[in-house]
Length: 215
Image (cartoon, rainbow, N blue to C red; front, top):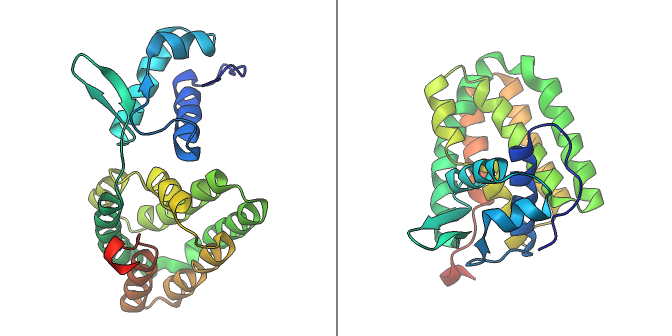
């Protein structure tokens, strides 16, 4: 696990978190692999404090777990867990889109730009960047619902990380996935709350991992 690229003076913990997350998503770090603070700090030429903070953030995201007397290790994220999260996302984002439709034209440019960014990442085969833009697209909608409780609930789902996991396990074409966001924009901009709710909810459910019995 070589992580010895130089780090900038920006948030060290965030950079360490993102590097570890990238390695988990690409399979360089596998479920069950131990994450030793001292070793990571040595490889990144930093102290243990930002490493400890990064590990706390990853645990809050549900990517790693800390076991008594065993330390931190990469956590197994099951398809069933992902399916349940997508079910919850569908309800939250459907309602958020319904509320956002009340002032939909205000976010059209931002959402359209993010779809362009997703398509660009898809062409490059950059799934990590794709997950970033995908998460931001949905965040813009939820933020523009005007409902802070809804936003708080949505944030607990860690959409970026779960999107990365789902993309890594899925054979879904990223270009098609990017394009599948366009009907959401159209529905929100139309000002039709019921339509926006239905389209956004269907979008999330269409991308839910398939149960083993359905394969």
